[in-house]
Image 1 (tube, rainbow, N blue to C red):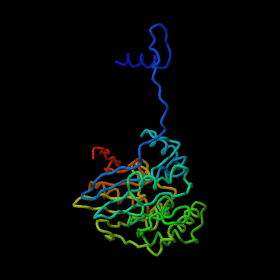
Image 2: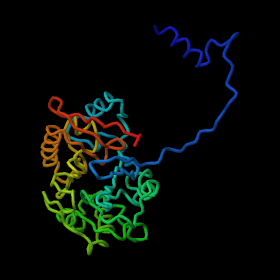
Image 3: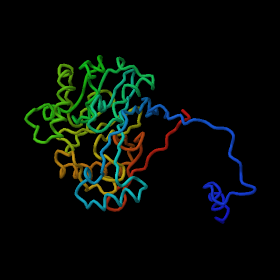
Image 4: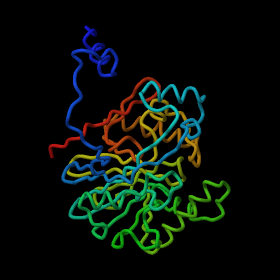
Length: 322
């Protein structure tokens, strides 16, 4: 059954050409090198959700960030899932919820930081492409104080990117990531410098959220510590439907999901992060709750299901016929 397939591919490779060879096509076109707009929109109840990308975060060699198992196991899991075993690039999936006439942005990306490569910092362009004006955003909700989540609160001139928004986050993360005494590691020093740059200018409009608090209509905070002291997930509800923004419960849709006991380089308390991840993945899978993950492949929306000693992530197909 494959004979015709191999013959066609042999001719395409240029081998065996002679009399009767297929002539080259006359039409030619340059490569466009332009991708589709980096936003995606769907409804949850009466709320309109728009995922707006900040681009990529480039981590390099995967086994240097995903820890606690042999390097070969990390590479095997990636290879088995048709992913690069040597180069790790993860998404930065911010999103805006339009509910009751109010716009709420969740996490703000890397901003001007190039700590994780040149592919981030696209959020302002993505918002504009999606038809969302930054001055119309009334709330900015922060899952935790790491650079790739708070880096876009101010611009490179220290001007507020969202001038009419209150900012919501946990007090524990604000205190930790603005504390200059925490600069015990080179990467942590960079994180704190950027946290202070972005969080201190909004201190007077900052609202601290607590576990199980519905701090905005339809938006409830769920404490999920470990990755950072105050890392927080959020339950977004509207008209009987809901989904969870899981933040950095996992940085990858295979690693840390199929093997949830694996650890991550930038965890403040890796052991606590594992226990929180097991608890939250178990809850979300058992209750068949939809999730939006900050670092999963675009747009990062789907479900978790139990699979052996771990879990699997099942992405929800994008519906473009809206």
